[in-house]
Image 1 (cartoon, rainbow over the protein chains, first blue to last red):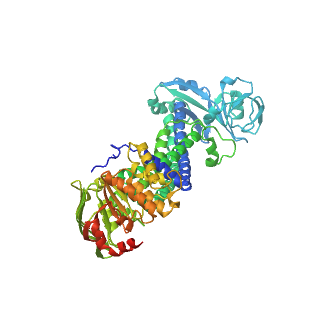
Image 2 (image 1 turned 90 degrees about the horizontal axis):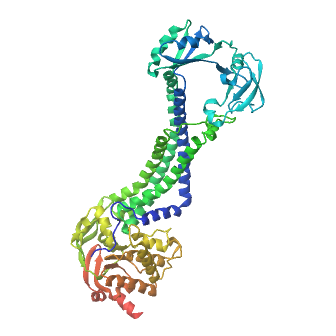
Image 3 (image 1 turned 30 degrees about the vertical axis):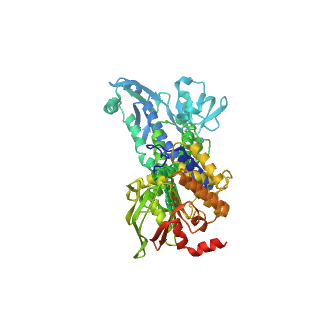
Amino acid sequence: MVCRSRPCAGDAVSFGIFALACRRITMQPVRHALVACALLLATTVAAALLLIETAVARTADRIALAGPSLVVSRVDAGGWAAMPVSAADVIARIPGVRSSAARVWGVLPGPPTLTIIADPALGGASGEIICGRGVPGAMAGAAFSIRALDGAELPARVRSLLDEETDTLAYDVAYAPAPLASRALLLDSDHATDIAVESVRPEEDDALVRDLAAGLGYPVRVVTRAQMRGVWQTRAGMRGTLRLMALTPALLTVLLLAAALAMGGSESRRDAGKLKLAGWQTRDVAWLFALQSMSICTASVGLGLVVAYVLVIPLGAGPLLGPLFGWTTSTPHLILDAGGAVQVLLLVGGIMMVPILGASLLPAWRAARIDPADLLEAP
Amino acid sequence: MVRAERLILDVKDGTAQRRLIDDVSFELSVGEAALLFGESGAGKSTLLSILACLRRPTSGQVVANGEPVSRFVAEHRDRWRRSVGYMHQRLHLFEELDALENVLIPALPLRSGVREYQARARSLLESLDVAASSGTPVGRMSGGERQRIAVARALLVRPPILLLDEPTAHQDDARCERILAAIDEARHRGAAVMIAAHDPRVQAWPGIAKVLRIENGRLIAAGSAANLRDWVPERHAHDSGT
């Protein structure tokens, strides 16, 4: 007396179970659509925030690595002071220094606030500047007025605007001829803001600090690349807060959904009993419930992750920066480093899916522990 | 062959113990149909649920093909239950699914023969006078239709053991005959059939070879179909008169 029908071999799940899982979703479309929307939103918000945080941190690291090995600036009793351009030649002769260059740059309070950087390639007296896209009123070919630190209006003409790929570095920056930049910053033509130094061996930067300090005849402050990166590291506390901001609502959402699934378990237990009555094994029942919840979960969480990725990496987080940071004017198109995105997406995906999967398997797990007759009589 | 050996089922009723099945033993052979009858609450459905391994007996055992299936661990009992076509008195259909979907439920975990089962499900529904392709959820169907769907579901995978709890209770004579014909076909294929029923039409069905009478959980009589007339004379007298 052997039944002719054979169950699935091994761990294979039959298409019929998957078909029933899909059918059960369509049986309660509103309920499942709400669950899917909640998961989609929670995933998008959590993943986007974490992606921004990770991408900004990695981009900052990349920028720090692209900067000079050391920056030497003069200080006196009042703080920062301009330093003679000739200091670059003095520094260049110090052993361990590969090259040095005087830099003229500074922030003009405006309005509008403008970061001005001297660019020798722009020629001496052309009066032409190149602006980032975030400089208010700057249009290619148009006249532009720079308000110097003493309030004087300095006439200039915008040669061109930088394209959006430079937004991360130069959104509100104006590159100007050195004389114009020096005038705006009230620097003499033979003085610079600081000296950028490239060392021969980056690992000896710390040792070079003492030589640089001793090589000039006035007090200086020397900042190494490692120290610049350290500034970002000190913002770890803020990053932790952002992570918490991102994950708390997502966790709450997913736990509420999981709790709702677990509390609605009597219906699922009865269904498990009906299925066992019809010859299903616990494994088949578990597959059904898992496939049902995973179909919704995978679709909504997967879509949420894709939306978050597209918003943050290809779109440069632009649509999110206004609501997140309160920027009401045009927002920069950040060129963010996508490295680490996979870990973030896996983390968020796991956090969203594991509790839902667990809650959906609970009825099957309970069903395995009690007689099917008791399942059918579940209240 | 299925054999019940000294089955006892005790359940807790508050602080007290209540005996639902009391020392029941019988045997059911291949291709044999047995009628289980008794008053409401006598323990018929409970006995069927023990035979289907939906419930474990407190003591005694159910033996099928020489194996003590009721003593199997849950996973093996689940696997054995594939050999049982069970129609519960409460039907336990999926209300939102239609007739065809409900009948196909036992076949869904099976990896092969999908089309064969679909064809068989349609054929069974047709033979039991249920529209297979209506798409109407069974929750909106009549009690009689739902009952026939449950019978079709129990028959779908051609199980070697059929346990049917009141399969004809809500049927008119024509449809009752259809159900009994479908059961008879299964019996002729070699299925051991046990039907719990009050329905005199089932009691009068010539396919019944064995009759078991249960009262207060005890099997008080077992015999051939001919004995039935002696046990329920008033009903047969009534049937003869109508």
